[in-house]
Length: 571
Image (cartoon, rainbow, N blue to C red; front, side):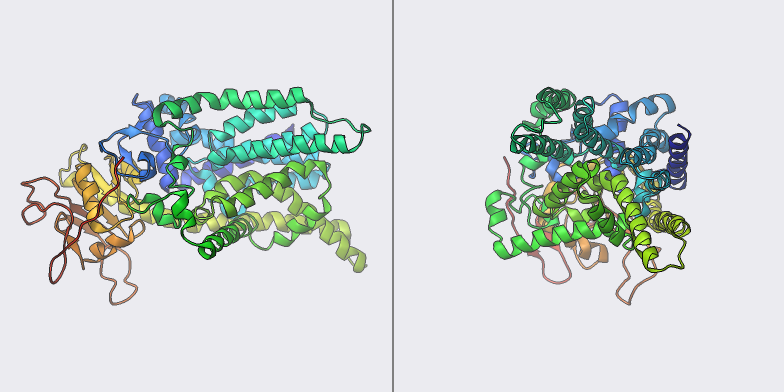
């Protein structure tokens, strides 16, 4: 037990250091999970006073626009729920919410060791796999975030391991795997792909038994398969019942079409661009195939660069080829194929934004075991041709170098990414302070490009800037009684870029009440701020915008005033 405990402790320290270096959430997913957890902790239930994307409202401006709204129409609840006991004990500090992620995520390292030992590898490879999983190259930085990376990695890897154990005759493994698929499916919508991999392995096992003409019996019985499905259902049923009761669908964001049938990622947060199966097909065969191909390429690129540090990729192929017939990796290979296929065929548009990597972290332990097996095989092949090599010493050296590559890229990646996060956090903390100095009430609603993030830093709810023309954005502001607009370079829709640059200002928007510009200009035209706060005037008599109130739909620009009218779909 000493080795797995030591690996767990090492991984725990790594994740604790990540949190110490950057204790806050850093991007929309993690902000959202923390905001929902705090709402639950405050007794508000699964309800939030902001809209991070209009997939939360069916992909359109509702007939009765209001806040708060029911949460989790898209993102699932596990990453918020697990924070609650720690918030109850330690309060709502950022570190308190991170404790469960640090503990659960650290289990991935000893799990990698157990998977390797079960597959019959050497103890050296098992330990090395555990160390690499503790510091998984450039994906390391995400293991210190209140996101589902730290949850899905050990859950998914455990399902793949238990599935392999079931194929080797462990009768308890398959039902437990079904239970964990249910838990994983409360972290990720595509957790069901783990269940699909188990189902394929089960029916493949029975098909082989049938083809044998009775000389081979199925390894997994029907009883184990039924119990596997039943335990999955027991876990997910309460949440599915809630989703049906609140939204009328177990996957509301998919039902709206804004996840499955968009042509480009900006359509996800539009309320005017259609997102139907017919509009999806209407783009034509060429663009459709192109987007699928590029989605698949992006998924492969994400994994090769972020998990394999690029240079480890050949060793993965060597190890996978050598282990292609091993039952220990059969479900891993099935799940890998399903995940990459889904990335290319179903979620291609979302892959560049990190959707694939969130689920692919479940592959990391098995991947690193195969990489290390590939290194050993490559050293053995070379040693047979170079008599001067001491194979044992060379193996130890190159295994150590492989672990070193993962740790070095993990450290460098963390440094660079957290540096970017820190700059964004600084800007948002500054605007939060400015809002307090200006006497802006905590109940005044804000429109921004990342409402979950600004809810976290400013405590104020609001709605996201839709990816639509300026007059549509004005209609949304009016519908939700928005008082302030925050624009920042890093989270801004294309139509509001000219507003931040000062070349366009709609009549419902006043001059900046506060700006911050600390970025060295890239060229002579780079004179606009990093972040700016504008008053929004959507009520008669509001003089903060410097003129009489004009209904949204008329833009004030240098030169002649031009008005336009855009209808907004309502249910």
